[in-house]
Length: 319
Length: 289
Image (cartoon, rainbow over all chains, first blue to last red; front, side):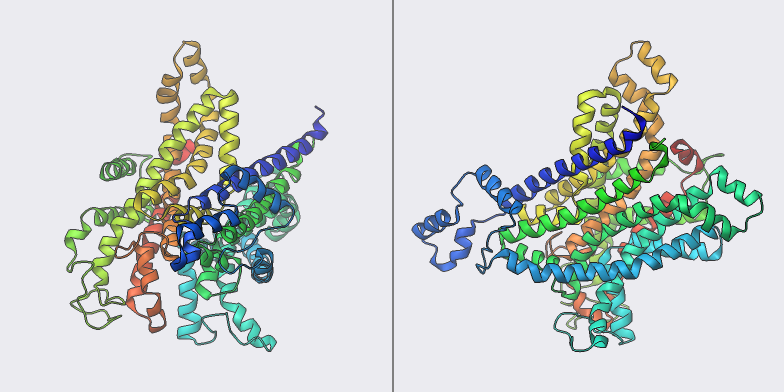
C-alpha cells in the first residue's frame, strides 16, 4: 500500500471499529434492559393483572415474540427514527425526547463554550511556565477535581454559591426564565459543575500535549537560537501540538456524558439523563433503551472524533 | 474479599523505601499513609465504632459535631462516625475486590494476547475496544437497573467496566517486552508460552501494572460512589460513602456535618491514591519508560 494512503486506511479502520462498537453496544443495551426484574405487563396492569389481561397485554405489546426478533425490529425502528412508545404514559418516545434532548444539548453546548477557552489557556499557560507556582497550583487543582466524584463537585458548588453566598438558586427546574439574567442564573449551577469536571481533564491533557512538543529537539533549537519562552511555545511548539490538543478536547468532552447524568439528577435539570434515571425507576424499557443509545452514540462519536483527529494530524503517517 | 484485600496490600507494600531507587518523596509517603489508614479502617473499623451503625442514637436529626457524636448525626439521628467506619468496608472492600478481579483478568488476557498474537489477539482486542466505547457510569446504571443491586453484582459490573482498559494497558506493555532479545532467546530455547508469560514478561511489566491498578482503583471508587449516589449502589440500611452523601443530601442547605464528612472520606481516599501513584519510587517508574 502506498504510504500516502495509510492515514485514510487507518481512518476507515477506526470508523469500522466505531460501527462494530455501536452494534455491540446496542446489543448490550437491548439485552441488559431485557433482564429487568418483573414482568412489564404485570407492572403496568397493577391491580387489574388477571392472567388473561396479562397475556392479552403481552400479545398486544409484542412481548411474547422471541427476544432476537424484537431486537432486530428495535434496531430497524432506531434506524428509521421510530423509537417506539413509552410503556408508562403511552407517549411517542421521539416526542418525549425531543424537548429533553434540546435541553441536554444546550447544557452541553454552554459548558463547552465556557470550558474550552478557559481550559486551553490554563493548560497552555501551565505548560509554558512549567514548574512555576502557577503550574503547581493548576496541577494540584486539576488533580483534586479529577479525583473526587462529580456529585461532590456539584455539592460543593451548591454549598458555596447557593448556601453560603446565596447568589444562585440550588435547583434549575421551575426557575424563572423570563429575562436573560434569571435564565443565566438557572443555568449557572449545572454549567459551573460540568465545566469544572470537563476543564480539569482538558487542562491536564492540554498541558501534557504541549509539554511533549516542547521536549522535541526543534523547539529546544528555537530556545537556543534566542527565541523568548513565549515565542518558543506559541510560535514553534503550539502549531504542532494542535492535533493532540484537539484530540484532548474531544476526549474530555466525552466526560460530559457521565457528568451530565449526575448533574441533571442533582439539579433536577429537565434533560435526557434525568428522563433516563426516572425511567429506570418506572421500568420504562423502550425509554431506557433510547436514552442509553443516545448517550452511547454521543460518547462514541466524541471518542471516535478524538481518534480521527489524532490519526489525521499525525504528520508521521503522511510521509 | 479479605484474602484479596491482603494480597493487594502486600503488593502495594512492596515499594517501601529500602536502599537507593526505592525511596520516594513526602507527598507519596503521605498518600501511602492515608491509603493504608483507610485499608486498616475497612478491616477493623466496625469494631471500633462507638455506636452500632444502624441504631438511632440521637433524637435530633442532622446533629452537630459533639463529644458523643464525633462527626454529628444523620437524617435519622444515627452516628455518622460509626457509619463512615462501616462504610469504609463497603467502599474500600468493593473497590478492592473489583480492581483485583479486573486487573488480574485484564493482565493475564493481555499477556496471552501479546505472546500468542494472531486471531486470538485480534478478536479479543477489537471486542474489548468495543466495550471501551460504553461510558462507564451509563454501563453501571443500565446493568444495575437490569439485575438489581447487590454487592456481587456491583463487583462484577465494576470489573466488567474496567477490565478492557487494564487489558489494553497490559497488552501494550507486554507487546514491547515481547520483542526484546531475552524473550526471543527464551523462545528459541524452546520455552513454553506459560514460561514466557510468567518468567520473562510478567516481572518486567509488574511496576507499571501496579501503578495502573492504583489509578483504576480510584476510577472504581468514583463510579461506585456515583452509583450509590444515584441510589443504585449499596442498598439501605447499609451505606457506602456515596450512599451516605445521598442519604444526607437534604442536610446540605443546613451545612450539616453528615453530608460533609462522607465527602471528605471519599476525597481523602482517592486523592491519597493519586498522590502515591504520581510519586512512585523511581525503580518502578523507570520500567514504564
